[in-house]
Image (cartoon, rainbow, N blue to C red; front, top):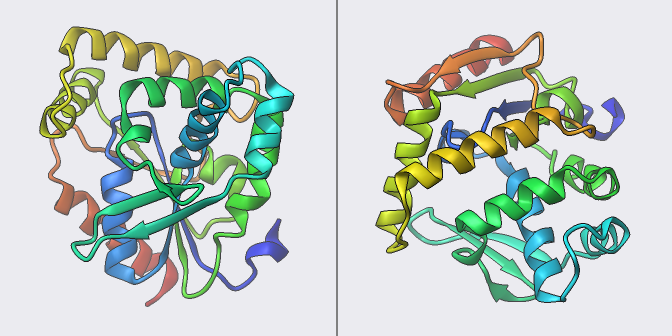
Length: 230
């Protein structure tokens, strides 16, 4: 693995759903001018493409083939927002729904799919550096990452954030139902046989429950500057 990212500094940011990984990772990557890997989006795209093609989400070989052949592009708006394209179609909104998140968690538990996406994720590592957002970035995908961060937050706070995010997108959601879904996703992610969600022994834990996004970003940038000497 080391040869694949030789000379490329990697900041691996892991943690459970709703801990703030996506928002924080985008901000850190933007501040440094580095590439961003949103690994969760890859699994959401596999699940979304599978459903679009009429594939059962328990059909591991079929989903692995979809993962290997994914025609995707990650772009940004002028304001710095994300744009995700699947087969030249903007699916940014569709892959951020609760259903897409739940589907992604199911698909991510399939070893063949994880293997199909592993090399693709590692190829995101290019100069000047990579910020990798996911659940197994520091433990599996980039075990030699120079900086490993594990973001966490209380389940109640994570559900509250997701509820607020969905409301801002005009999507109706029930807070109690979101809490149950997050608890189930945590259980599924932590107990899956393939690359479960775990905190790397050498990761720095940051509890974001009562921290502002800017404060979390500055903390990570400070750690990166200290470790990487820039």
